[in-house]
Image (tube, rainbow over all chains, first blue to last red; front, side, top):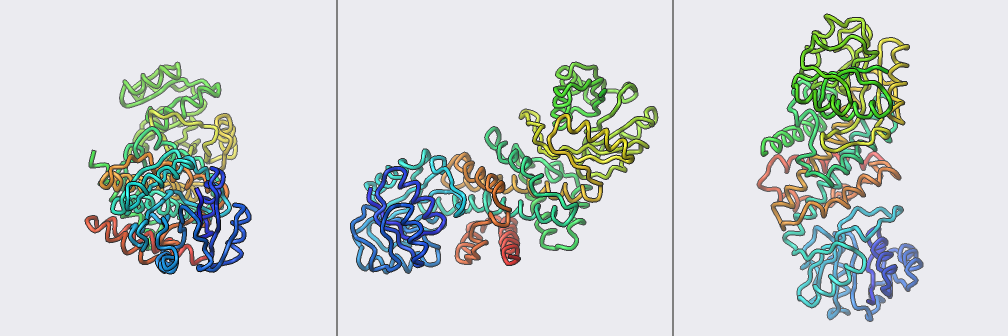
Length: 257
Length: 257
């Protein structure tokens, strides 16, 4: 397919590379920042622009991978010239209808992207949605050229999928951050000592549910250990509250069984 | 070395197998529950007992791997007959001095153990502590027969290490649980769709710190998305509070840079 990428951030970069490798023709990269547009365009062997009215009109699909906050206004400007084209956004948290196009859709690859770390797209689940069944099929077909796992999912359910991803990725990663801070402040151990534990915590999920995998003081409701650990956090009242909320929630989840 | 295992739970089972494979002679397994003692003893080709006064006196080291709540009372009873022996416990959260023995110590393999999932002990960091330098060396040598990563760490710093592990393992896993519940309730997607995201969240930590790896609405301080997600949790006030605390803490961490 002939594709135009609107955006040159982490997601656009990773997605663009995957599409390019899968044999699609990237016609153009747009970014507000010329240097970002050029950097990605060089990799994808295509033209680039930092000017919205220069976005070419010959693509089969326009993929808008921009920050949620600017997506709508950029889409509105593009709509003036390209209203008949198929436009999709890549945001898990936004409904399809933030796009003004008749042929609108969503192409959400659920992963955490960093600019300097390449990801294997084939294992990333992609969630697609479109107004018409025909465009749904186009998106599904496109997604299957880069990923082994493709689902159709409507905007309402995607909101919860994205919220689930915030817990599984962003909040879990912040748990790692908080753990890293504790290590830095006490005993001067490198954070690398935590990696086998974190790996196993993730690996367990291939053979049991997170509910079954739960361990620790809150799971055993070991109030002695919990109270001592809350005291260790005495200088950080927000962390104490977080510890208490977590422990309560783990306990309630355990009682469900 | 000649070893007696006091306990036959997840940790004792995994540790016992690793020690056995490394060529140590397990003399005996004690468990309050005869069937547990027998099950593990069969694997370790040794005798077993469910009676504390029948614990044999010929071992070089006694490893007490019991729930924190019963550790002290069991140790006191064993101390009556075996006061001159080297006793260690395996609890990250407890100080060495919960043991009444003159030759006391700690042998803490930091990992999350499940009974039915074997772990590769060689990558598990072990933290050892003893009263005398000689016993420290004994524990270090023993640990190095089963693990590539061994640290001496005193009880004070180990408290924080264990708290860090609670964040990195128990709390992170509960984030996965909460994410799994959201998926179950909306859209009926299998939890397996989250595994690539969780894997990548863990894998990133090999090339960047968790602070550098942080992504998501709170990191970008995208109040629009955050407010909508808090509304999605309207039926669960504790989860809303957890979401708010997390977002605030992620934001504060981001501002540190």
